Length: 120
Length: 107
Image (cartoon, rainbow over all chains, first blue to last red; front, side, top):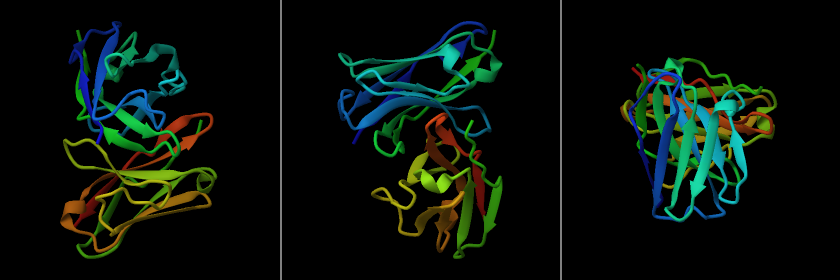
């Protein structure tokens, strides 16, 4: 059973870069079965997919965020990371790291989520 | 860009059947999945590949997908089923797409 844990600052200033890391336990991030990705949820609103990465380097980003997002994998530490630059208040959200099946793109495992607030 | 549309809210009486729809262009040609999210919790996958239930999901949850509409059906709805539900699909241009979510109220 995969377990995911997000970590990173809970407060980011406008125009700066939001950086989060997801630590994976119970399985290898080098698995060919999964995509590793990020999903966010602004307070009181719905889910928004940010992007997903396959360990061999294939990456998909939400077209609406693509210019500001970087997702990467650290196989030596069994972690993957999110960087979102030039943040504004609209980026305030609970950020989930998540595991998506390679075949049907259903998200099977979710982290507990971490609230990131963008404010000066 | 590809979009999925859900009704904002659905109400059902305990023991009755709840149906939540998700509409998108030629959605039936794609795999649809459904998530349940209770307040303060992470979403949980309840249906994948249109109609399959992950281990541990009660049999009262079922799904279908045809034409432009996917439907999540909850038979014999219980108070514990009250939650927000989100549909999701994969599109070749927009990739992972979520519906806007439906709040299920068990009255």
